[in-house]
Length: 537
Ligand SMILES: Nc1ncnc2c1ncn2[C@@H]1O[C@H](COP(=O)(O)OP(=O)(O)O)[C@@H](O)[C@H]1O
Ligand SMILES: [Mg+2]
Image (cartoon, rainbow, N blue to C red; front, top):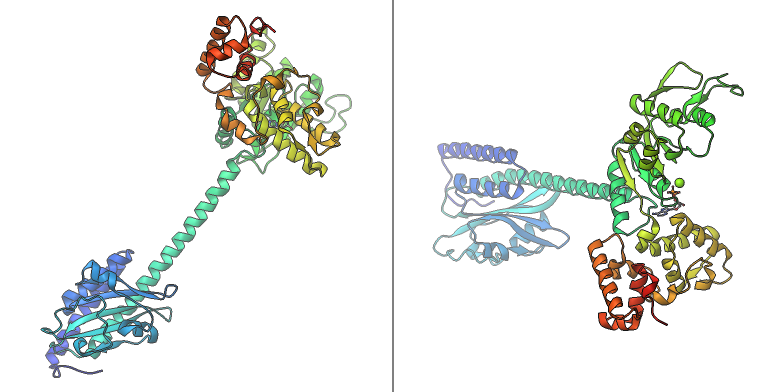
């Protein structure tokens, strides 16, 4: 390494050592204080600048993917100059430092043809001859960047000294960059992990197997999701076949108890004495035929959930026993004296009008309040017709899969399905689709295959539907009886007025309303407007 000035005195050398140590100390303090790389690197350059009289300084990092060495931080340069400071591997002095991983010194940059001055930040070269020192920044044995400084020529310092100090600094910088990259990498990994966990939770939360796009069904999914997380008793209400059992299972399998058993008891299926021993178990010899002790469903469900279906049919005596279990979480087996404690989450369901049963004296009011902690009411299918297409599609796919068939349905057959009232709700629809898939000789289900006890007028009165079921729900939200009841009512009033004005002649009434006769016929049906207004044929 060339030495520019005359040999420094011992005193000068000592002063310089002290200065170097102070600089390194300040820089190590700085690096220990924060993980903000940009801020730390800028700090390093500032300290170099103030302690060691280095005029310009840059820290460049190399991106091997882009083959680009660019300035991360700089002091003594404008943003434009910084932006220009980009180099490829092997290009100019800086590129060579990256390429070879060794320091380079230009004693006088004004006289050096290899010096690119790409940043054009050295217009004052002539008046102040300047040396340029660049040392590699290394991490893990690789050159990841360059630390460079400008130094005024005249100072009585050997380049070797500068290179030595800068190399120590570069190794500190290398560690800081490395650390920061590792932290960033880890953080990215953690973020990705969080995202995938969230994703998993979302799919978990989307209640498995519960099909429905109607507003009410979406609300129910949401309720299930929330109630699952607690152990609150849930009471599911709704007509037969609306999905109460499906929901009960969803609550259990979305709950922290998912790994523990889900046990079902149908309270309407057994006579009282059998039901009692079924629920609470019995001891040996409790009654004739009780040849061995038997655990009841409450015990079997310990740690999990007990689904009490048709709770409205529970005999009075058992209602009292159940009430006690709900209050105390403990009971005795039939014929036993030992008290058994259980941790069971109760989900009850009924299609019955419990309030009415209470009034009649066939259901205990106190039990009702114990069960009715979180009530969820499942609407009948006819009140959420917009779910019919998705459900039909779902069951079609399900039974095609089960029976290795590829049956499809015409749009008109779907219209027929949509027009029917489905008193048996989703169960009836499911059975109907299953039967169609099994029985159909053709690949395509036609309206006449449906065998629904349906008003044949319907096909003419319902508006045409697209073949795909999906647009139906989106295209006709006003058809949803659950949404915007006031809108529905005002439409009904409009139709009634028009019909009155047109003396019940639908074509005329349609003209008055500015809609097609077919649209009017549909509205008449939808609002169940009485026959006296049907067209005078
Ligand atoms: N929203 C729904 N999505 C998919 N399948 C449903 C839905 N609701 C009900 N089902 C299906 O309909 C049938 C009857 O449902 P179930 O839960 O037994 O009704 P409930 O207990 O109210 O009588 C079951 O096969 C069930 O899987
Ligand atoms: Mg049921």
